[in-house]
Image (cartoon, rainbow over all chains, first blue to last red; front, side, top):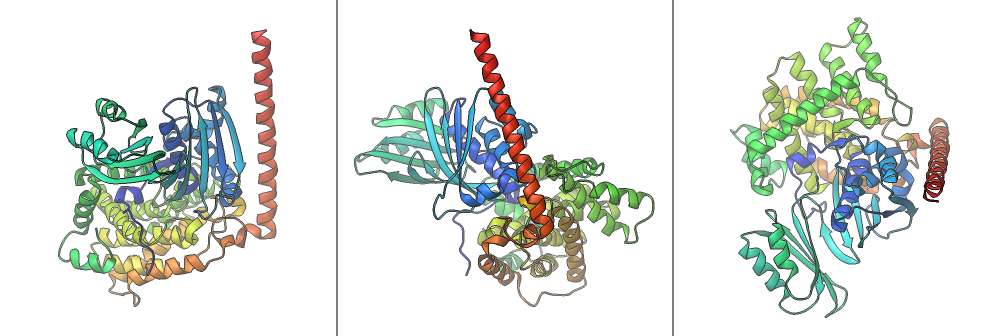
Length: 227
Length: 311
């Protein structure tokens, strides 16, 4: 029996996305991975380094993955006709771009680590483009995650302590927002920890502010569905 | 969730198939049926645009393809084609979409970009030739997407995961089911059309020359659009697939796993490593290196300019 994936693919995911060619896995998926990095950074980048897993490094250029990754990282959507010009646009914006190759281990062939830096902060994600424009992000800033960009999500970086989940979910419940799934990971007991909360409806700036002010929360990011 | 094609056949008995898919998808993903239909209306329009733009041709990014649609369109217009108009148009529209795709034009991944010509090729040609209401085409896109979403429960839809069978095979299967629906077939005919199409693409490898979605992808889309039409024809005549669709999907996944890495989109085997394929790959690499050097020189020039400006 074939392995079943943990999440279902919708009709619109299969019959889509509308995108700039030529490859849904190498162009649309990689653009979405770049976009995830940009959205977590939450400011215009000044430098981005793309570390490609060897199979992707062997194939990325001919599929325009370089344009797509950069396009996503500067905030372009997968159907933006400016994607073929993305590297030139990024350079005009003064963004330093670097491509490198490294074995990322037992991962999907089309995997990349994106190290993105802005004027005020930096972030790092590792993810795969698994086909048809569908992505999986499985590391954020060194924390394990399992993020697909297909629903609104709240990402929290905090200090591990008892009661954290209940305090955060309390705020979300008070905002009338339904939680679809919740995932936590930490580097060490009582140290840096990370929480990913998939929600059914958008989180307002006010609610996000309330979540940020929960004790020991270092940073909170709300990401809308990645187009 | 519709777990299998077997479950689908039971669930959809006596109902209009798109309604079953729309209902399930709305429950599963929280998107109302009307929104899904509206999105698919827009996607049909993108497909239609693509077919129009693609007919005029142009060179692909890798300069290997791009004018196939233009040549076939000319032959068709001048009465130099010998196949029936439906078949020619299915080929033509698939080529048009793939030409646009190869030029980094805006297309609909159906289910992927590399196999994105097949579903529009089949459906738009049929719509035109049989004067089918475009709204029925939109509902057929629901059927195509629904078939793909059941396959995707077991299989990664990418050449990197399982070879071309996972892309072109799946697209042809989705399109065959959708065509069976458009021509009045019920759930049984739809599933059998999808099964016959998919079964006969098993083992298809992904060996793109130079790693580009150009050779053999562009022409392959045209051929497998026709393949899907013939599968639908058989199913509508009452021909059943001996191996049930669910088992065909399982076989596809197993075959995909056992395919060597060199035949799964890496451009390290098959057509990609023929004498001609390898020579093209070398040329592409040289050109890419040259472009990179030019870009580096341009960056250097801009930096010098900025420096001169600030002093």
